[in-house]
Each structure stands twice: as C-alpha cells, then as structure tokens.
Image (tube, rainbow, N blue to C red; front, side, top):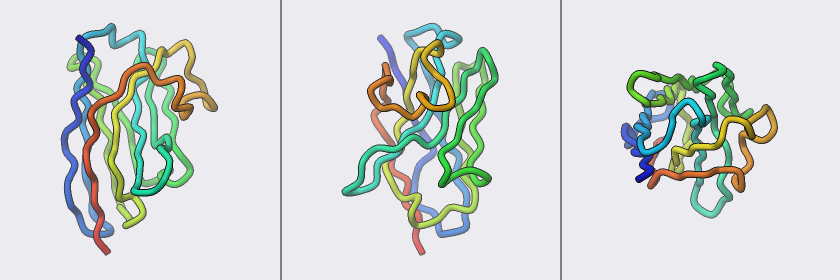
Length: 128
C-alpha cells in the first residue's frame, strides 16, 4: 500500500519557521520525485517544491524561492520541507506528492495531473 504521511504542520507567527516531513512507503523511492503542493482556501492547488532524490534536482515555486528548502533522506525514504520567513499567504493545506521521476522536469514538476500519489494533507497556518 502506497503511503505518504505528512507531519510538522501547525500554527506559526509571520516570520517564523516550520519543517514539514513526508514519510513515503509502498513504492520504490528512487523511482519517484517527491514534492509538495499546497491549496489555500478558495484557490487552486499549486506546486511548492519538488526533489528527485536519484538526480538531486530540486524545484521551487516563485513565491517560495529563497525561503523554503527541500531535502531528501533516502535512507529513511523521507522528504523534508524547511519553511522559513513564513508569510500569512503561505497559509494552506500542504500535500506531499510523488511523481514518476522520468516525467519530472523544470516545467512538469508542478503539473497536478502528473502526480501519481497524494498524501492526506496537513494544515499550515501563518498568523499576521
């Protein structure tokens, strides 16, 4: 059974930090790129970041570049998203996703229809 289990969300003040974790199981970790999407209330899902553990490539959405850092611990099949300098507009449900790494590039990583697996989502709330 494929599982993507997110943790680390919560409430933080603007300017603060959070680290999200995504523990993956049930598929071959190296065959997939793992990333994060988010969905704010009333808005469409958007790609936040993605990492291909086998190639080392990382991708970031424009709104989070320079503030968020994605990393991968292949021994633990876990991906982390370090979120610094958080803003109220970062408030959203964050979803861990997995996509076949052969499909992932600088453009495709944020395409919702290419996501193979979704986590259940975790709330991140940034207060002003």
